[in-house]
Image (cartoon, rainbow, N blue to C red; front, side):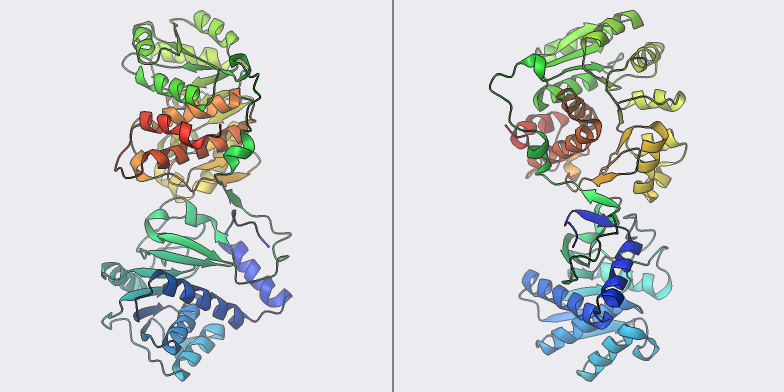
Length: 488
């Protein structure tokens, strides 16, 4: 039915659910039972030693899933405690039927204040319709669940998490495992979702393959196989003039390291030639760090213009600064028709002097995105999908919104999400490395969108490879690890 990498908004998943029920004759209660059965199977596989569980049920169909799972566990010989925030008699529809079947099977219902005694907790409090922070008894029970030492299984998504944005506006369950149903919700892969979902598994509940044929996904996940698809093996007669010449422009006084990292990343990604255009005082230091770089002291726009003429791709911004020299370099580079990756202070100057430009890739973090859109980083994070689409549209560029679950968007609204990367990458220079990687891929002939998304993917996978068993890595560690993830 759906490619396993496709991501949907919550309303789209509800539409898929409706189509299964009304268009294909699958009763809603049957879907509820399938969901609960799938989650119970995952529970037993993940925690085979557990025989005592506490299930927390809300008032809607998510709570109904919980009632069914509780009944299945009871019938399997588990000791099951069920805590409900709404009396069964006050439920309706399939959730009411699920509660009645639970009671008929011999189950009982505890009120929200009951002591929790399960060795495993099952969260079935809130579903995908949440658009505000949980309040009252819901918030209180979520806090109690999080304070309990037992692991948590969340049904569909952790209660309190927004299925579209990945943000938790208030209290939110911290799950060790989340089993989501029908289709992947886009918010599970970006924003703050990673702090709450734990391991994420999908069960499509055996709904018909044709269900989503005319319902395009909102976004798509990147997969590691994209590297081999977009970077085929090179012919044996390849030479350096055929693999792109990247010019990195930056390195104001005191910031010589940033362009060097970008240049090193471009070299490791496969560029045949990489030049640096930098301040005279930093040129010698840059050359000493990486002799394969061609380093040029550029102190005026005319000198930069000559360097641009020899390059295929520009990487503008690493260590660029905000001085008069910086502004002059930025203005000269922006006159060029060369494909360009714009980052760091290159984005600062773009925000000061907005303009459209052909073949442009911008790579802001949330703070830089806020500057480019005239808002706050909190507003950017509140809906990263909307933010990255706005960036791409406003600047007629391919936009990369960095962070956990980095997003890559085209001006026409296509979005891909990177599910790789890790907290050990939270160190200086990571963005400079990404700029060099993307610029290198542009120079090797990839289209802007492909260069951006494959660059983000390679960057994240190299970060994961470098971080194995380590709390923190350096940008140079990631650059070294590129050789382990890029196809030969």
